[in-house]
Amino acid sequence: MEDVEHIEKEMKLIDANGVRLDGRKYNELRPIRIEAGVLKRADGSAYIEWGGNKVLAAVYGPREAHPRHIQDPARALVQCRYNMAPFSVSDRKRPGPDRRSVEISKVISEAFSSVVFKEQFPRTSVDIFIEVLQADAGTRCAGLTAASVALADAGVPMRDLVAACASGKIGGVVCLDLNKEEDNFGDADCPMAVVHGTGEVVLLQMDGHLTYDEFQKAMELSLGAADKLFELQRDALRRRYSVTLEEILREAPPAAPAPPPEEPREFEQMPEEPGTSPDSDKELPEDDFGPEGL
Ligand code: UDP
Image 1 (cartoon, rainbow, N blue to C red):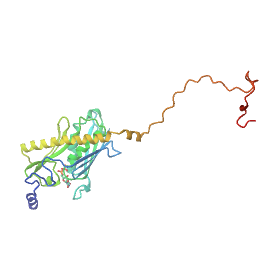
Image 2: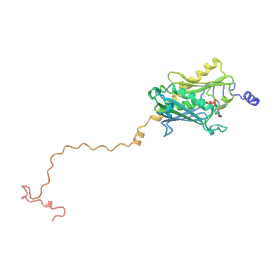
Image 3: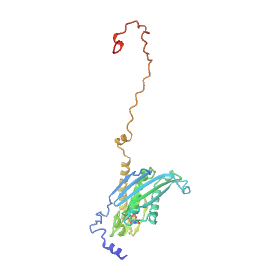
Image 4: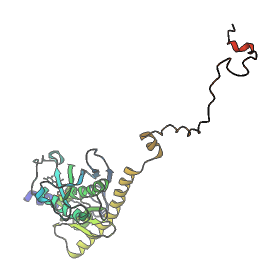
């Protein structure tokens, strides 16, 4: 314990110029990349890389809820399973659910439950799977942000996209988007999910302590980050669904032009048998004996 306290005191998470260990300023996000529609078998999916985090989200449904006794006759259930792969962290994580993953699954389900139009799909379930492949703090926010894109990709009707980002306190300074070292050795971490458009907060947690003013500052930073995240989410969906003319042509080459409609057939005269026409006594021209002649 003393060792940890010693490391915490020695470790300068943010220097006098306000520069953090990874070179960011207090209000900067880590690099983020989102891709929509990455899994063929899911109804909707997305992949996000957020700093050192790599997270996949898959969505199924709305589909009939099983077992039947969990069905709600008035609305759909929104269920989430957050899972960390054993190889996603430096110390191998024991496979399977634990208290932390059950808690994260619950808060993410509740966040989406307030935006999905559940009343449109009674007795069904919308299932969200979040798989953390590599973790570097902020995985619940990365997973939720990707899951929102996956829900949109699956065509699940919802009020708007949801984006999440944590803010916290390191070395007495309120900072945006803490990485693993900052999360472990910092003073506080406060993940927050926001509905774009309304600014409604649908997930808010806190690990550590912040004063009222610090919390206001943290909220301001996370709300600003949510706007940037929304743009990345929207761009990912646009890339997924914008198709060029060449792509359309490659998928389905144009059918051969249809033949023009047939003209109504006039009465066709049968060729006359030689000798049956009234002019048959007329002499046939010489070249009528064929190319070789007689
Ligand atoms: N972590 C870990 N082992 C675990 C759980 C978490 O190494 O069993 C690390 C992981 O990098 C995670 C970070 O601790 O991203 C912070 O975890 P926290 O519970 O704060 O959730 P998160 O910030 O990822 O949403």
